[in-house]
Picture 1 (tube, one colour):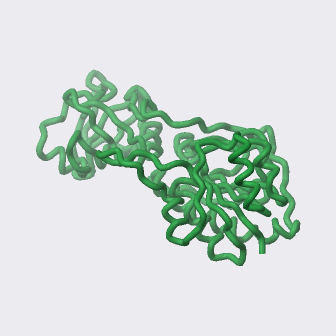
Picture 2 (cartoon, rainbow, N blue to C red):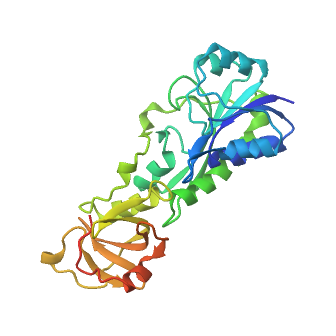
Length: 315
C-alpha cells in the first residue's frame, strides 16, 4: 500500500481524488489552494477538492506557495511514496518534485505534447480539434514537459461546450489514473518522452478573450462561444448593454437572403424559432441562448419575441 499526497483544486480533480480514496492505497494528505472569496458576500469558500477531502476525513493542507522550507518540511513529514497532481494550479519546485520515492505524476486534459498549459480544453475547442483526451505524465521541471505514461483519446462532439467536455475528460482522467496507478508504483509502466515537434501551448484565459469580434468567421465565433461556456462566456453589446452568448451554431443557411449591402458584421438579419441570425466576416452565426444583465439565461427565440432587434448591429 502506497502513501499518496494528492494535489488538486477545482472540479476537474475530484473524480481522480475519489478513485484514489477508493483504491487500496492511503491518501495521507490533500494539497489544495487556499479558500477563495465567492458569491455576492465574497465569503471565503472551500474549493471542490477540499470539500471532497473533508467529507472523507482526509488531512487538508492549503499553503499559498510551495517554495518555503517550512512547507517542504511539512510535505516531507507525510512520507509520501507518490504525489498525484490534477489541476492543482501551482508549479511544483524541484525540491517538492523529488520528495516522493516514485515521483510526482500528473493528469493533464490534452493529448500531450499538444496543448501544454493552463487551458487545454478551451484551446482544443478554439482550434477546431476533432479529438482530444487526457495524458498521465511524470512531472518534471517546466510546463507539462515530462515523459508520458499513457494517453486516452476521445472525439469532441458536435456542439460540445467546454463545460461538457471538461466533465467527460475529468472522468476519463480518473479512469486512466486508476488503470495505471499500480503499474507505475510497481515500475511496470515506462514513460516516453514527448515529441518536441508537436508542442502547442494553451495560455491562461482572460475575460477580455470572450469579447466577440464579428469580423471573424461564423465557424470561429461558434468555437469561441463553446470554448468559453461556462467561463468567461462569449459576449457582445446590444443597445449599449452586455449580451452574453451561451449557445450558438454556425448556420448552414440564413433564414433570409442577405444582400451584400446589408451584410455588415454584427448585423442581426433574422429571428427564427432556432435563434437570432447574425452576419459575421464569413457566414451566419445563429445565437441559440443568451443572457442580458440582471436576467436569466433564455433561448434566443424567446428573447427575440419580446424585442424588435432585426437590423440592429451587435458589438
